[in-house]
Structures are given as structure tokens and as C-alpha cells.
Length: 160
Image 1 (cartoon, rainbow, N blue to C red):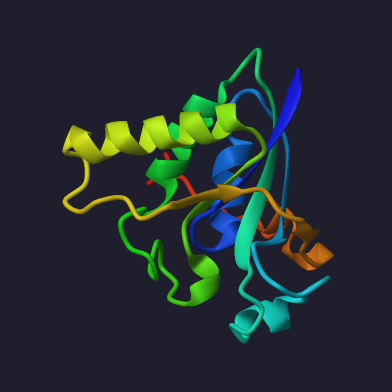
Image 2 (tube, rainbow, N blue to C red; image 1 turned 30 degrees about the horizontal axis):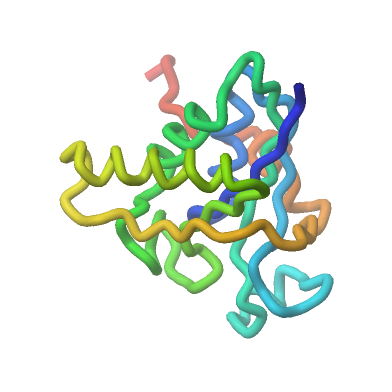
């Protein structure tokens, strides 16, 4: 069965590219979620006046990859212990968030966070917010599949 999850954790370009490499991920789309403006643009979000975060909508086949597995990968893609600086960027639109559709999804997210918090993997507590899903506004076309369009890779090259 195909399912979707909305995840935010830094610049959506790199997060999207990493999810695209996971078996079972069917498609990805970048956009904005969590704010108070209808149909925000990238410029609006960058002004930090909308409350939105850069978000990746991940469509996946849960017979191949589970939500738990996707969340475990998500926490490896950014620093979930820093509320304002989860990656290489610093701004409010880069906050770490998981948007859930059901109580089951919320419970899975909270279980993964609780496990990681006690695992010793991080020196500080995870600050990723787990909140109800909201309207997802797709980003402008030039942001979609950015790494792929520009021949970029988020993985180290084997040629070096």
C-alpha cells in the first residue's frame, strides 16, 4: 500500500535526494508546511514571516519500507538536536518536524525519538517536533528534484 509522510529537517533539497535513494520510496516532492500563509512562495518562507518549514513529502510502499525505517533514516539526514540549525543552514524554515496523519504514525515517531534519545547516539536531546499534518504546499518547480536536475550527489563519490 502506498502511504505518504511529511518530514522537515533542514534544506529540502538534500533531504529529498537522500529519501530518493531508499528502496521502497516511490516519489518525493518538496514544499512548505506548518505555517499560517496560503500558497507561500520560497521568497515568503525565506523571509521567516509565514511560519512554514521546508518539507519533503515522501510517498512510499509500506510493504517495502516502513515508516519506522524512514524515520530512522530521516534522523541520520540532519541534526535533530538543534532546533534552529539542523543542517548547513540557519533559519526558522529549517526546523526539524514530523507531521503525522494518524495516532499510529504519531506513536511510531515518538517511539523512534524516545529510542534515539536513550541510545547515546546524540549528545543532546532530540528537539524534532511531532505535530498533526497540515496543508502541504508544493514548492516551485525549480526546487523539485534539485540534486537530480543539477547532477549533484549527497553521497561521497567512489571515484576519489
